[in-house]
Amino acid sequence: MKTKILNLTIALFLMASFSALGQELKTEKFKVYGSCGMCENRIEKAASDLGGVTSADWNKETKVLEISFDSEKVKIEDIHKAIAKVGHDTEKEKADDNVYNALPGCCQYR
Image (cartoon, rainbow, N blue to C red):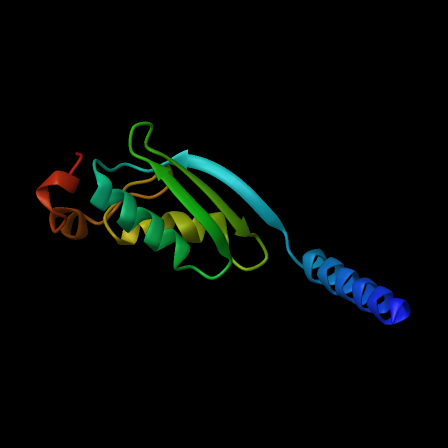
């Protein structure tokens, strides 16, 4: 019985180790412009909807997004583009004026 438990534990450890080897997890922070809680939800959702993003947290006071992602599945440039596509400027991408103008008034920051 002890041998089976030991073998199972070793097998689980090896599986976890191999799955982690294929990931290139990165965490980055960058400015994303917005104003309110609706902005926060929109920004975090746009980033989180991309495959490979493991977490996204935008601070409305500092306007900084902290994001963790698998760099083998998604590029940081794609994250900036996805956020700009929903109407929010980032350090690297500017939102289309038509998309920005369609945001609720409380979300317009320009």
